[in-house]
Image (cartoon, rainbow, N blue to C red; front, side):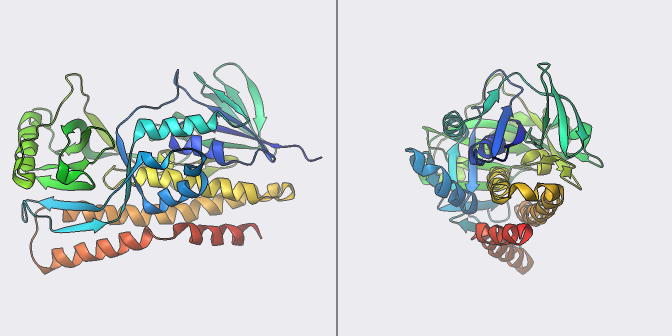
Length: 383
């Protein structure tokens, strides 16, 4: 009988939990570690594109009464001062929104039903390649050899920074602040991307009683000093657009986070591979982070599950090819996101409209049957 391959997953966010769930236990012995004292079932509302939702629907949502957690987005509106208060274009049927805490609770519930180890308060202390394995010492003192180590530690991944070369960690020039709004009936199934008076951001509908105002502050260095005036701009915009008094609810202890962008030339190093935001974290404008984490987990697990034990000698080549294919898709979509951000700035004329229509067309194209494309690529890679 062939012994199972041992896989270590570091990071219990969306990508890490999904890979843990998807891996075939008849082939793999899986350990999931998380640096926190508990699993990270906290956060705000998140958007997931149709291509990511379809993967969840095929694999997880039928296991419980989970579909009700997701709200279908009918429109994503673009607003700016040139067309304000009307949107200059909108994306229809982009995807779904879901409360992050409820989403992660679903993943944790399903993960706990599966054979495997889930260790809290644990990180990778040291790692080195030995023969066709990766020797890992954990912060708990445990040492073992793994056939593969999957890093899903998020945008601030310490393991990535230590063991991967030529990484660029850039200041995006933006900071982000979260607030909650009273529910606006007109926003029940809409997201809004806006740029008003140098305030750029996203208002996201929510399954709960409130709506999350998830906005980026100005790139100017005095953004903290201007925060109060920017909040007033947001309130004015809501009244003008929706004709209702709807003030954001800010937390007294709310933090302002500087936003980073990650550039990783090669997201695999020997028997280590980066997935999710650890590999391609960017600005959270269109909800691409959750979508990419979902795709990363599904397609990477699909690749491993289709591998035969005799094919593990070339697993490093296969995950290298996988990473390059994923990188091309990610980079193309983030280029399009940049177009969307630039088009949210005040602009008039035919060029703005043409670029807006182009962005809509290509975004919708990439949101189609992405899974079919990747399954074909995976089959080609392992045959």
